[in-house]
Image 1: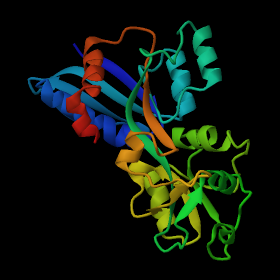
Image 2 (image 1 turned 180 degrees about the vertical axis):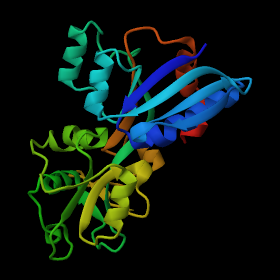
Image 3 (image 1 turned 135 degrees about the vertical axis):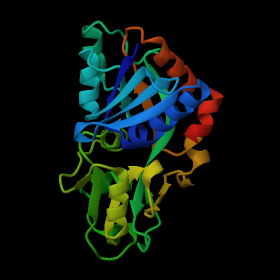
Length: 279
């Protein structure tokens, strides 16, 4: 019989690329076939088929904000939440009150891979680096001219993913909150980091924060710090978490026991064969 699994979240790079690739890899190792079906509102599903025609599992990917994903998990309306940020203290408290225990426990979340939040500009922008405090001030609207960063006398145009995305919330939690700064309201928003990167590429006075996995042809700025360090986002710096704005790709799981096929898939996702796919 067919086992339904509901995966919710706003993270396009996890939902549209990484998890489908892992499902394909898992199916290949276990002699399943896969079929992808498009659903309404941009949602989609993956069927695992045995013998080419008998469904054994249905992975349904539902688009929502990260906030809504955690709310669905608390309401037992989701099996997995895809997030590019850690669960927040209020969500953790609500989970405890709902009888779900500690959502930060080792059995309740998995780091699927490491991504990073990277500042991106157009290839022709003369600015090549920015400090973490400056980046926070830029996205708080305190630095509004490129001249303050060593660039031309021109206003800075700010670009971020949509408000409910885990990447934007990670920017708020990891970049702005430590500096005690609010996020500027003068922003252009995008459903996808890839769309953000394309827009920044064509605007010489734009700066955005994108997923490292989806920077496209935009140029990443090097991050500098008070101790004289200068780090560019790269596979090694992200993997060692030397890059200061790493963003783990989380899967959050419910308190109940998932079906065996789901447990097998999660075990596969942590194994060496999956690392090749993730890389």
